[in-house]
Image (tube, rainbow, N blue to C red; front, side, top):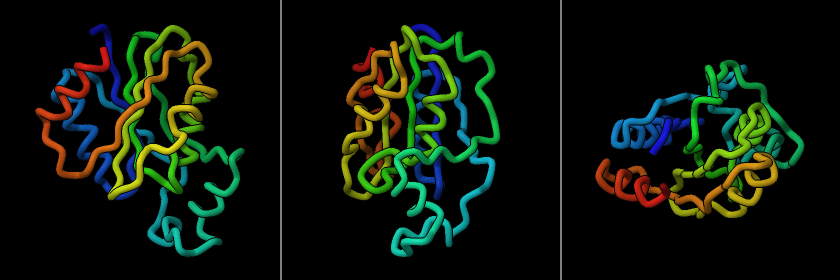
Length: 158
């Protein structure tokens, strides 16, 4: 399996819980992608076209700053990248994360939480940002997914 990292961004805590279950089930290291400027409830109001998340998602070049870094990304051969679905794709902060590291020779596996939306073009977007990586299609999960289901899915990715 090699050294595996589960990196995730979570706005509400749902993706955080799933990521912890995933990392625990496969014995991977865990890394939370923490925004330099925390998102407030008002920032996350998708019905407000002026909210921070709406503005970021409407600008494909938006790159929100991340307040922490993965120590020694080179040690990982596989990186699971988790996020909530925003506007039918990965949040812009995931794009920041993907551009912050070299993924040459690594396998990147997106996974997302959503009440119903699929991954959209997330994997294609991440492929463009992670040059030299093998980016898999990924999977969307509901909040109630079991640790066993996550482990079974993850093992199929190797």
